[in-house]
Every structure is written in structure tokens, then in C-alpha cells.
Amino acid sequence: MPAPTNRRQLLAEVFAARARIEELSWQSATGVRHDESEMAHLGLHLSELIEAYRNSLGSIPLSRCPFTQQVWSRRMDISGLEGLWWDYEAPVRVAEMEPEHFVALTGSLRPSTLLEDFPFLCKPGPEVPYVLRFLMQRPGIKAVMSRLPIGPHEGTAITYFSETPAAGFAVPNEWGSSRHAFIAADGGLVTTQDRISDDEFDYDLRPYLAQGQLLWIHPDDGDLALQSGVSDCPYLDQAGRRSPLFISRGQVWTAEDPPDIEESSDDIPMVDFSDVMAEIESELDAEESPAPRAKAAPSPPPSKSAAHCPHCGGDVRPGAKFCGHCGKAMPPPSASLCPACGGEVRPGAKFCGHCGQSLK
Image (cartoon, rainbow, N blue to C red; front, side):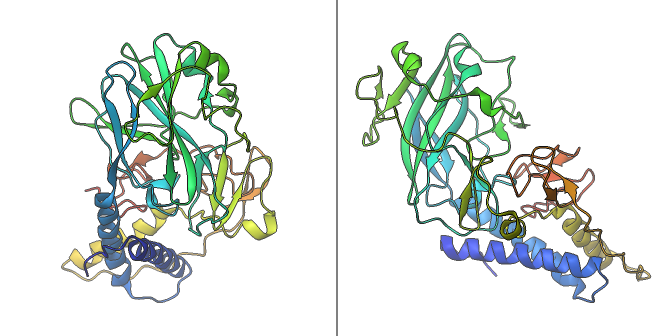
């Protein structure tokens, strides 16, 4: 069945496929009988859906390099936060070659009261625009702020450029993502995951504006002309939360103001799809094998004993990559990364559990 061309229908099928894969994985782990071929077919269908979504991403002019005056664009989803581009744990994006002076893309977002309901964690930054102090302290680096709508929400893209080749420091993860992925000059995919402390967020923009280190683009300027100086800067003195936002299932919160634990813990997705894809792999192997194999005894039900968040002490499911109570990242396990989506996969896995990409 071909993937839908309608965005809403496409996303609905993605979420339905993921939910069904989770359900079948649990049935298999608990010894419940199910159609052994369905898991494999779902994995392949999910891969097709993900690829259709990735191909639908348009190139959006976001910023302008202050050193070359060239407009910089990024293929992204600005139709709403329910798009897979905004899935913090497993973002579906297009890795692109970066221009010579480009360093990083971060951002902030002021959410509308019309919050989408989606089954993944979105981390679009704080409400108030900011700069990263450690980057602005490096010689030759300038930042550019520009505004763009993300569905009904107000986003601010914060793009960093360097006059000279930038190296020797941590590169922040891309806006709304748990990683930074790009195509290197040799054509290879490069993925980095550098966690930047919230203490590096500097909301006092005036010194950087006065020094000409922070430039800005008027929100209504389709030509993306660079502006400088404090006067008339629309990004100053913004009201809002100055902590990174966490959004999922129609809820928005910060680490300082988490949702009610009893009501939220089951709503935040914590699925580790590596086990799911292991099930798919075993079923595909069974289909390809010419000789019948004895059916293994059902595995015992997975333990539901919870680990504890080192930040807030709340219970989290084993294998979770973030805490559903405070939203902070859990210590990451060692894992490989999918070359298609950048999601974590088990070493030796044949399929990515986030996007369905074959890893053979």
C-alpha cells in the first residue's frame, strides 16, 4: 500500500504502526500468540512511511550568513510540532552538507494554546530567545535570530556562524533534536551528541547586540535582511519561561514545573524499539530459512521494576532515554546510531526501531 500524500493521514499511519509494533512486541514477550509475519510487514511499512515523510520536507529559508551574505535554508517541518522532525528522541530529518561558515542551529518556541496531541517527546527550547554563552565567547562567531511560524506556534531560529573554521568545542544538538547530523565533505554522515548545560543559555541579549555579535532579521522580512543594534530589536525583553520546554500528548512543562506524576507517567513514550526490531529480525530470518526451526519457549515477561531518575528521583522505565517526570535526560547506554534517522540501535541490529531502516 503506498504511503499517503496527506500529511495528517501519513502521521496518523506512522503513529498507528508504532503503536501496533509496541503491542505485538509486548504480546511476544509475554507469550501471547500473534501473527508472526505481521511484525515484519509493519516494520517494512513503517520504513516506507518514514521515507515518505522525509521526502516531503521542504527547504525553508531561515537565516543569512553575516560573512558571505548568503541565505541559509534547512529542510524542516514548519506545519506543526506533531511532525516527526520534532521527535526529540528519533527525529526524522534530512542530513545536509553545511556551508563553510555554519556552526549550529538552535531555537526557542512560544507555544500556542492550540497544542497538538502526539505520542513522542518534543523539546523545542525555552519560550524566550537566548544565545549560548560558550559559543558567543569564541572569537569570530556571530549569531543570527529569525522568526518563523511552526504551525500555530511562534518559533525563533538561532543560527551560529564562524568567520574562521570552527573546531575544538562542543557543537550543540540541532534545534529540537537529541543530536546533530550532517553530511561531511567526503560524503559521509556525521552525527554528534553533545549535551549543553542550561546554564549556558544567556537571555540577556543586549551586550551581544551592542557589540554587533548578535544580528537579527525582522519577523516580517521575506528577504531576510540582516539588522544590527539594540534599537527596535523585536527579540528583546520577551516574556515567557526561561527553561527548555517539554511537550507531549497535548501537555507542555519544564523541569521546574513538571506535570502531575500519576497522570503523566504513562503518557510519555518510553518505548525502546531495539527489542521490537529484534522480533522483526527473528521473524524475517524464519521466513528466509529453508528448514523449519523449533519454536523457542516463550520469554518471561519483561520486568517492570523501575529505574530512578538521577535528577528528580522519579521512577522511569528500564531503557528510557529521558525522565517522564522532570523531562531530563537519563545517562545514555552505549549504542550504535541509525544512518537514516540517527536513532539509537543495538550493535548488530538489522533494522532501526525508530524508522524501520534496514541496517544490513
